[in-house]
Length: 71
Image (cartoon, rainbow, N blue to C red; front, top):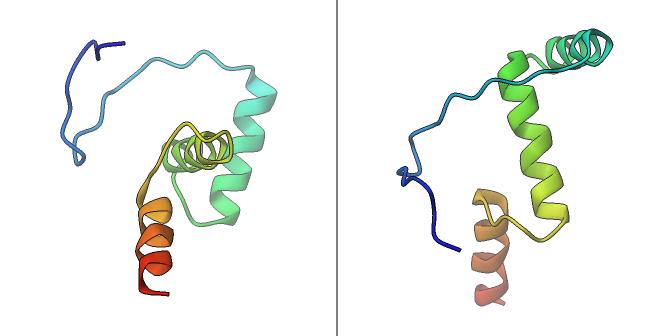
């Protein structure tokens, strides 16, 4: 499936997120506990979920591949 738009790795796309207020409050607290912004916390959670599902190879995955090549 072709991409609808192309971004470099350093660019980010702004999106509108509709979220239940209770979930937002929980995310804000979690983000504060980990010294992140709410936006960064949401991105962190999405990255982890995508990696776990095998649908995204981010910097952590690239680092694992480099380590495996060294062994």
